[in-house]
Image (tube, rainbow over all chains, first blue to last red; front, side, top):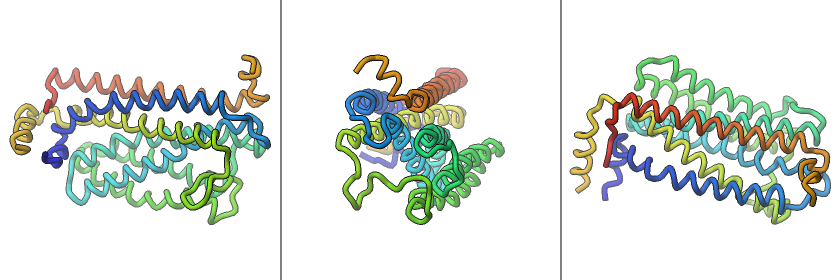
Amino acid sequence: MNWFRFASPASFYPLAGRLAPWFGGAAALFAAAGLYVGLVAAPTDATQGDAYRIIFVHVAAAWMSMFIYLVMAFWCAVSLMFNARLAAMMAQALAPTGALFTALALVTGALWGKPTWGTYWAWDARMTSELILLFLYLGYMALRQAIDEPRRADRASAVLALVGAINVPIIYFSVKWWNTLHQGASVSLTSAPTMAAMMLTGMLLMALAAWFYSIAIALTRVRAIILERERHAGWVGEAALAARGAR
Amino acid sequence: MSVAEFVSMGGYGFYVWGSYTACVLAIAAEIVIVRSRFAAARRAAGGREPSA
């Protein structure tokens, strides 16, 4: 099987259509389990009371906001290096979902900050760099919108996305590098988690749900983008050629 | 745990439910927007779609 044939938008289109419902279904299942664990099964926190339950949506949204940006920047790099249309479309499809999760991380963070810190917002390093991430997503989308020719929009927005990628490690390590109001990492690869097993389970379930949701929605959006951008390409011939090349 | 206790979330109901409601609304809106965009793109393509 020649996997490179899926680098063609016309070949990827039906594959994305077959995959999206599975990821969407997995997202719904994991979200249902995560919501049950997070809102019902997990015990009340000793110091924060039930306010801590915001963690289950906040951490999932915040992780996705950073991870989607890295994936988007990866596809931007691929599109620049190989002049690949599909890679640019993938980046284009991921940006709105990344922006959405960034906004949700900020909103849920504010709603968590008020009862625990006494303020909705502070200009600390973590929150400020996350806000900059939102502006990077919005800037990426605005730049695309402003350029009529899609391939030029691909290149210009890819450069912007790649330059902005420097912000992601800044967000992630901000709680270490600066003295922030925001707490440090609760879960890391280098140390044992500092929370109860049930809380950790709920957080991971919600994070997986957010992953699967992001994949499902991005696959559906990329299908729309393929139709919008390539509907004059004469697919029937192109798909047939790709299938012949695979044999 | 009673329903009233569950709703009040130990007095933090506004913050907890506000967070979850914001997430549910945002994701529901994105699903509606993306589906309608895809449907519109399909209509514009006039039934011609790439098929493997």
